[in-house]
Length: 243
Image (cartoon, rainbow, N blue to C red; front, side):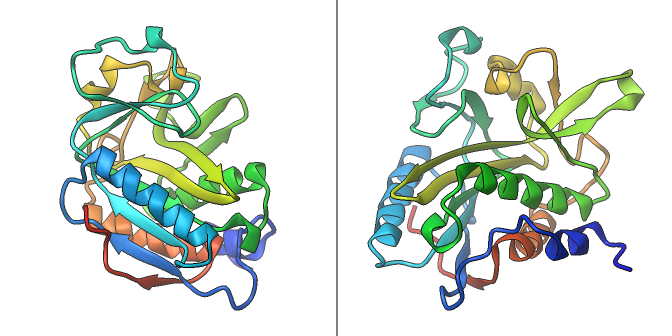
C-alpha cells in the first residue's frame, strides 16, 4: 500500500501528462528580482514560439519586486491602496494579487494540445501540484469550489478560519498556457493589505514561514520540481530567460 500522498497523486487519474515523445519541460530558475513587464513580454513570446512548434514547453521560477497585478476580472474597489506599489494590468484570469520577495512565482508554459485541451482539468492539475508541494512540508493545502487558489485551515484561530497560501491565474492562447501560480514562502504578508486578494473578503493570507515552516526558497523549488514531475511529466534544467 502506498502511504505517501504525493505518490498516491502519481497513481490516480487527473495527471496532466504529455503525449509520448513530446519531450521534457524546460525548467529554469531566475536568481534575481525579475521585472514584471519584461517577464510578461518574454513569456508571451515564448508561448507563441511553443504554439508554432519552435520551442519546448517550459516553467520559469521567479521572484518579483513588490507589485500588484490586476487580472481581467479585477474590480477597482479591491485596490485598497492604489499608491502603495506599482499596479500592472495583465491579461491573466482573476482579480488583484500581490507579488514580491519571498513569494515563488511559477510561470507555466505548456502546450495543452499535447496533453489535454481542457481548462478545468488544467487548473485542477495546477492545484494538485501545489497541494503535493505543500505536503512535502507537512502542510495540508485544500481546494475550495467557491474560491480560487489553495487554502490552509487555521483551527488555532477559530472554527472555520482559513488562509490562502497560493494563487492561480492563467491565460491560454492557441491552447498554450502562460502565467501560472504563486506560492507564499516568506513574503511580507502586510503587503497584501493594499488589495482584496483575488477579490475574496473574509479570509486571510498565510505563508510557509507564517505557518512555522522555516524553509528556504531552494528547498521549495526542489519540492515544486518533484511534484511537477508527478503531475505534468519530466523536466530538464534549462538556462533562465534573459530578464
